[in-house]
Amino acid sequence: MSRTYVITGAGSGIGAAAAALLSDRGHRVIGVDLKGADITADLSTADGRSAAAAAVVAASGGVVDAVIAAAGISAPIPLTVAVNYFGVTEFLDALAPTLAASDAPRIAVVSSMASLQPNSTELVEALLAGDEAKALEIGAALAEQGPETGYLNYPSSKRALSRWVRRESIAPRYAGAGIPVNAVAPGTVVTPMTAPLLATEEGRAMVDAAVPMPLNGHSDAVVIARLLAWLTSEENTHVTGQTIYVDGGADATLRGDDIWSALDRG
Figure 1 (cartoon, rainbow, N blue to C red):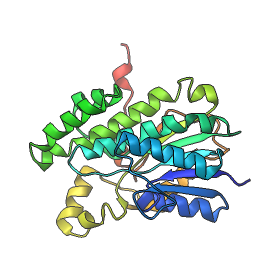
Figure 2 (figure 1 turned 90 degrees about the vertical axis):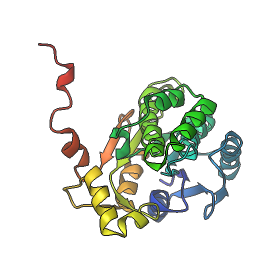
Figure 3 (figure 1 turned 30 degrees about the vertical axis):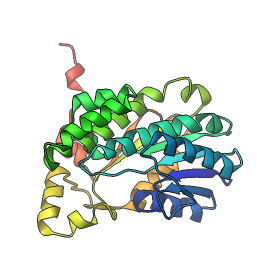
Figure 4 (figure 1 turned 120 degrees about the horizontal axis):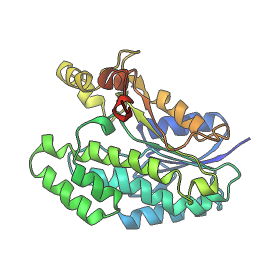
């Protein structure tokens, strides 16, 4: 049965791959992006997010079965947290009432392997508190220290996003309305965002040291799209609150075989 999907970041990368995959399967897709999509929107601002949500409701006729939030950037600047965190969470919250009217509503967002990397605890807490002004202030202070420190904006945004998914997935707004909410965390994906870095031997070596992928190496965007499609399908009735690593074994390589014993007692 055909479903109506809303996909942010549909103009390129994982979002574009998900849009193409779902369209090929006969579903209706409403793409949202800065360019190259059905709805042109800037998710870096509160006004842009609310306008995007209103445009989606109008374009869909009030029928939305699933949202895939794939829009994101990785620049070492505070704009990254505005797009990656608030551009996802505020947009989803605005569409939650419309989703709840579906017979099988679903949400999936794109987090990252970077959620496991060093981050700014202060920034993560500001994001989870919903304090965008403070988060941007912290992000700007990190950026002022140079690109290496400024990069903390990216893993912090993804850590906070995965934590938001875990927290909100069981809240009345989502679980209470029968809406599974999950995240996927890709390893290194070949997209326009990563292409410049992967174009050089030095860049590839740096990427592979941070995200080792022993199974099949770097992935294509469609690999991530296939999991997003299942998580937002009618088949998924009970998977919620999860960040699923689609990473060629990077998580297992970096964190090892035992991520549970810290909770053991005696």
